[in-house]
Image (cartoon, rainbow over all chains, first blue to last red; front, side):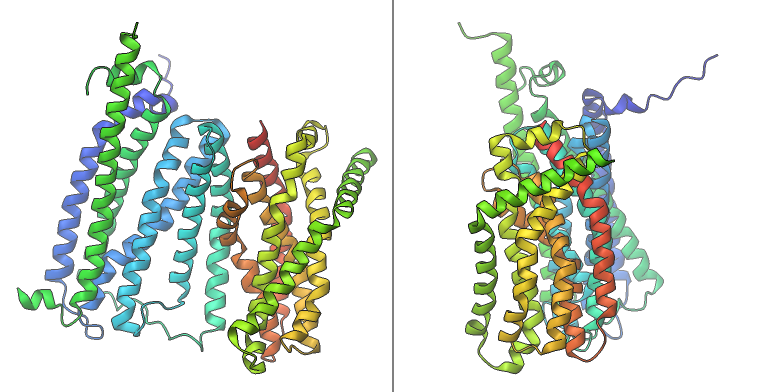
Length: 249
Length: 55
Length: 225
C-alpha cells in the first residue's frame, strides 16, 4: 500500500489556510487569556516583593516576554519571508506581512516597560543599556520593513522586496546586538551599571513562563487573524473568497 | 486593596507599564476587528456586484 | 575570464565617466559632509575639549548621512533611461556588475570623504595619530556604507519619496559600522590601540562585500521584473 505522501502544501493553499486558521484563532485566544490571568495572579499575588527592588520588579513579567517575543517574531518573519521569496508560497508572504505589526508592538512595549522599570531601579527613564538599545534598533528594523511594504503598490513586488529587507535585517541582528554589547561595555564607565534581573525564585520564574506563553499564544492568534484579513484583501477576486463572503453583510 | 495598588510605592511605574501593555494589545485587537468589518462589507458588496451586475 | 573582466572594466569606466561629467553630484555630497561637521561646533559650543571628545561621533555620523544622500542616484538615472534593464539582461553575473557600480559610486563619493576628513579632524582639534586612524577607519567604513546603502537604493527603486525611505531602511543596518568606526578613533584618543576596532571593521567590510551584492542583485531583479 503506497505510503500516503504527506501533502506539505495542503495547508498553504489560501482557502485551506483561511479555514484552518479561522478555527484555530479562538483556541489560541482563549489559551492566551487563561495563561495571562494565571501569570498575573502568580506574578502579583503569589510572588513576594524583591528584597532589593521591592515591587517594581513585577514589571519584568511583561517586559521580558515582550523582548523575547519581538526578537522571536522578527526571526519568524524572516523565515516566512524567505519561504515566500524562494518558493513563491503566497500564504508565507502573507504571514510575514502579518507578523511585522505585532512584532513592532512588542518591541515598543519592551522599550516602554523597560523605561518605566528603569526609573525606580536606575533612576532614569532611558539607559543606553545594550539590550534596550538593540531593542530600539530592532523597532527601527520593523518600521523599515513595514514602511517598505507599504510604499510599493504591487503586492507581489512589495512582498518580495520586503522579504529581501527582512533577510538583510535578520543577518544583521546578531551583528548589531554584539556590536552594541561591545559598545556598551567600552563606555561602561559613562552609563549606570545595570543590575541584571533579580535572582530568580522559582515562583517568579513560573510567573515569567506563564506570561511568556500567554504572549506567545496571543501573538499566534493576532498574527493569524491579520494574515486572514491580508489574504482576503489579496485574493478579493478569487472564487473561494466570494463563496465565503457572498451576501453576508 | 489600596496597599496592593500602591505596589510598595512603585504603583505608577508598575501600573503604567501594564496599562500600556493592555492599551497596546487590546488596541491591536480593536484595530483588527474594525478592519475585518470594513473588509467584510467591501467584499460582500463586491460579491453582490459580481452576482447581479448592474444593468 | 578575460571577457568578464573586460565587461566589468567597461562598466566601471562608463560609470566613472558619467560621474566625472556630472561632477556636481559628487561635490554636493562632499559639501554636505563639510557643512554638517562645521555646524556641530556652532550648536554645541567652541570648547575644544568637548569638541575633541565628540569628534569621532560627529565625523562618522556626518559621513554616514553624506553617503545616504548620494545613494538614491546610484541606480535612479540608469533606471530612468532603461540602461539598468540592459544590465540585468547581460550574460555576466549581476552581483559582479552591481559591485562595479558600487565601486564607481564609492570612488566618487566615499573616497573624497576620506580625503577631506583630516581637514575636518583638525577643525575639531584631533591630533596627527587620531586623524590617521580616522582616515583608516573611514577608508574601511565608507565602502560598507555604500554596499549596505545600495541594498536600500535597490529596494526603493522607482518609489515616490524613495530617498527618505532609504534612510529608514538602512540606518539600523549602519549601526555596527558606526560603532566600530567611531570606536576606533575614540580608542586612540584615550590611548588604547584601535587595532581591535579596525580589524572588526575590516571583517565587517569583507562580510558585507560577500553578501551585499547578492542582496542588491535580488532587489534589482524584484524591482525590475
